[in-house]
Length: 200
Length: 200
Length: 200
Figure 1: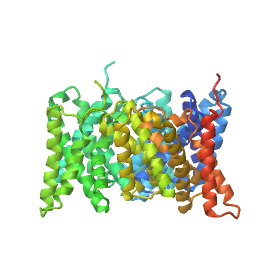
Figure 2: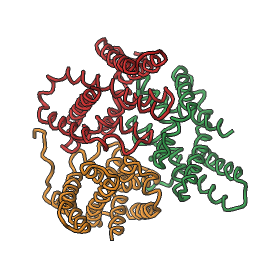
Figure 3: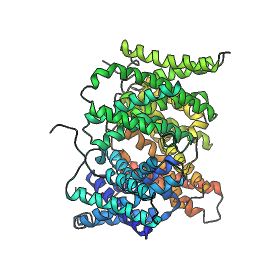
Figure 4: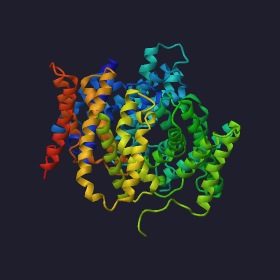
């Protein structure tokens, strides 16, 4: 079940990478790399920081295959992909929910402090996009306006709060994931953003 | 004692990160990340290169707390921070002196060649700023004009020269650190820069 | 023999780094860093991803010395370097051939899937240039138009195909390297590029 959600997230991230790379008029190789980096960049950075190498995507070929197929699909149907925008947004949002939890789990497994675990969750979910933007020569969009990291952090906090209570591990997992997803959906729907520190 | 200096450096770097991020009109999350990266980015790269993982800031929560508090402080008092400019410059300069030595020590501990140790010291002191500039979509300032790396290298060379003499470890440490700090202060005061290879 | 070719590649990459850095009007320190990164950046990323640390150039000082001397040479004779353009292009092409094979070997040694090994070879050969372009605030040129990665991939595929036959290891190595080199030479000579997905 988790695995399926993970794969949906990978697909959504890969397709979003393709769309950004096409906007930058990259060639086929560049598009593939950006798709790849968007999907697995966050997890790769996480694995490097905690020293869990070779990094995940080198040990499980599923990622490579899924990203490749998604990218080819997105390149072929690039002019029709707008119709999928809502589904993609949903996949992406579910994806970051799960990515956050995967990162947290890995942090716990490495005996790290809860705050560091939440940081790892957020890195897993959002730094694929950061690396994508750097490779595309842009200031990362999540540093400027997109509500992306805040839901991850809220989900992570929920996770560690619930663990204090006698609740089943699985349920904690699901609730924390739902917090990430719902917060992000609400933030996007109601155009909520972090309070601005700049004068209008 | 060293620990206190280290923390002063972290504070100075975090605040300088906040100021750069605000100039780029990043949101609160972006500002925090840039503060973090500026402070611990150099040490993180060093730890990754030598394989000392999980990287330092994941094992000692002091960094996270100090950076967070410094960043919040800098955001709140951003319009008054100019009054602190001289103190910040001093903290920063003392910080790179210490960071250089921390990097060198780590290199020695990993049995690396003196030149590589000096490189690790320089990376520790200056690559936080490099990563900050990349995330802000700028060519890193230390590659263009700021005298930043040269004092680190001179301090490192001093360190290894002095070690050849029967001088106490602690004294070697202090003298090398002072070389970094004084060289940088002089360079900034007298506007000394690397010889230019470009025609005027 | 391999070692000499490796060094020729390092020289070519270092000089190409110097030329790009000078174009960006970097100072001496910046130029050296870019020369370094262009030469060893790909191998460094490879070593980090598979967890082979301290990374290669920290354990063999030859790289540091060769890069330093090449960079000084390139800075001194920067206005005459055009005469060397053809030799440099050849060195560079031979260099990526060898870098590809080094990356593949390292991947096999770490028991990774052939596709991942080919990816490691391509990363070794081409990501020095990617990091160079990011530090110079450009979209990496190999994501846009240069045929660079495709020869590496073709060479890697050749390598794994030939290994299925009863051919001597050394010969497999040489043939795969030649495939990388010849494909790249032909692509450059006949201005072959990846099929474009953009309307003219």
